[in-house]
Amino acid sequence: METDDTRTRPEAECGHCRRGAYDFPLTMAFQPIVDIARQEVFAYEALVRGPNGETAGSVIAAVTETLLYGFDQACRITAIEQATALGLVGTSAALSINFMPNAVYEPKACIRKTLETAARVGFPTDRLIFEITEGEAVTDPAHLARIVTAYRAMGFRTAIDDFGAGHSNLNLLAQFRPDIIKLDMVLIRDIDRDKVRQSLVRHCVGLCDDLGILMVAEGIETLAEYQTLRGLGVQFIQGYLLAKPGWRRLPEAQFTDFTTV
Image (cartoon, rainbow, N blue to C red):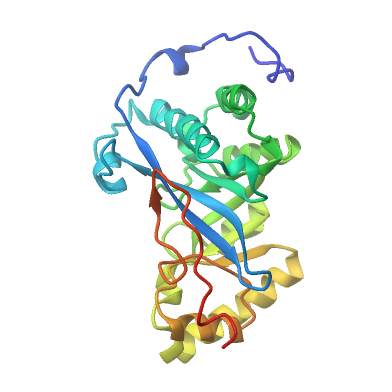
């Protein structure tokens, strides 16, 4: 059914595309991932919200298995459209989009609408990052490997979200060789007071350096956490300390008063 020329072939929907369409309104909030060494935004993560800013949990709770494919497509399209409308193209930052591996039945076919949307609004596809979400188990590792391989061949970067918690573990790292891993906030919370967490993160930094993987620490909320992570060699961070998710805007990261400590 699918050829390699998915970027140019006419619109042709298969059964997956026609059924389970997600017709509910949604929007995105954007939170920066910051390079603290360069004091600049590396990427913005698109976080799903309801049309009036309702939480991601309330939106996702209404997504049935039948709607999973359509929801995944709607999130990708909305993230690209809104990020472009908010001016992300005019910056050097990438756009990081969460995706559900179990919602992708064939990588080249399922990416078609994403590519069409990017072309329509003028968003550079080489600045797209796709994060493998932790919320669902990887039921078919071989299938996920095909997705990652296909995305890499098309020039996309891939990331493992919430690494170190739930389904995101060393097996995913070994099998799929992502470009980026994002340490779960469970490993980050109160790290300044926890020697075990410090040791784990220190070794993760070394592991990522050895493998050529960029590591992001998520969920930084306090200056003490920031100082500890910086001392452990972490360069990329995300969290409320620098910026909360911006609904209908791209928030600026706040470096003032602590980047020199």
